[in-house]
Image 1: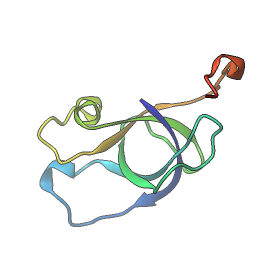
Image 2: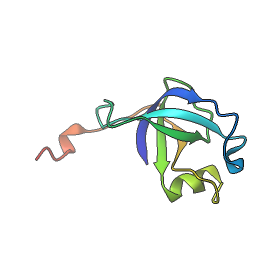
Image 3: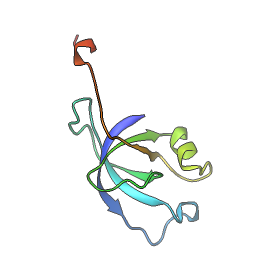
Amino acid sequence: MRIGRVIGTIVATRKDEKLVGSKLMVTQPLNIDLMPKGDPIIAVDTVGAGIGELVAYTTGTASRIGARKMDAPIDAAIVGIIDEIDINKALLDKS
């Protein structure tokens, strides 16, 4: 799983039929310091996340499993809303 922040929504009236009923969210990947990392992605929301929320998301096959849509064209899925993060940064290897 990875950390991201929901920064927007996608409305697509025409899309692959296997995505009908799926909520699509624009998600900004974040690093351990919660700073943007790379380009935003579009993720299927499986937990009812809202704009501005910190989320856990998966990619690849795990995203299709999380969305319970194994035959859908899904690259990323939001699978959790993060309430709190507690990291002991002294344990991170800075080399």
